Image 1 (cartoon, rainbow, N blue to C red):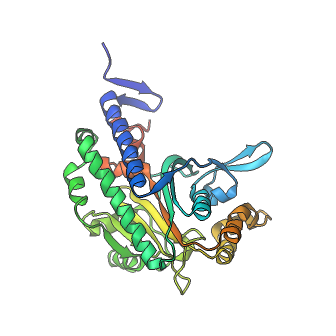
Image 2 (image 1 turned 120 degrees about the vertical axis):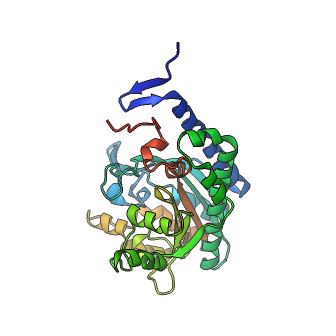
Image 3 (image 1 turned 90 degrees about the vertical axis):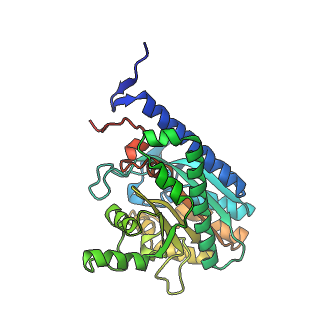
Length: 344
């Protein structure tokens, strides 16, 4: 007689729950791919072994390894590789790849919402000569459309499985038919300061506590936060005229918070080079007595050879999206749901 459960070093798993999770993940990935294809993106495979330039999110969280006697890193994002294709071919591309970040699951500041290896869906496309405000609005609309479409597909194909794993299907049904909220970073700070007595100032980063409070302030309707401070974002993002903010967004989904992040990219290669030198990764490389430009040499050559191009894109943290549809505040449940706490 076949057993209903199985046990591994991680804990005891319910076969029914595990089958439900794998079905949800399968149909979600399929829906992401189908929607991106309809929107004109071409899927490509990108490298997971990269130089330090592939650690574009946070060089301090980069997994370093020995690559035949040379230093290499596990990719955190395929963004620069996708940008190269967009600049060369003037088309939209996306990838579904693993992202590797040396971040602690038990981090007290972000407990239960980080994986060292997770699935990242990244679309990037050209936007002609559109103004950055319009490009940002287009990217936001596209991100909202994709999240709603994939959620609708799961409600159609996996309603039973979603309910079994704790998903609130009535809530999911509702949010696919209402507009997501859009607020600026400044407005988010104002909301937080009404709760925490002016504790926050411009330039402060937001963690899960802040993100959850903002979501609660809007009855847990998914919320875009736009125009983040320059120092909090990747160096090649397009900046406002005062240089203090970026044409960027984070999409907060309950209960795990930031799930999608995107931006307009700066089209002037010389400006990007200047931004790099004062960025987190630029300083990281310089502190090792190395030239910050060298790892990005091929990237900067693109602008010389192909010229300026307004472009933009975003990344979807797939596991956090799964946490959204199954209503789990523990990222581990998005890859190995047991129905119990698998941390033994």
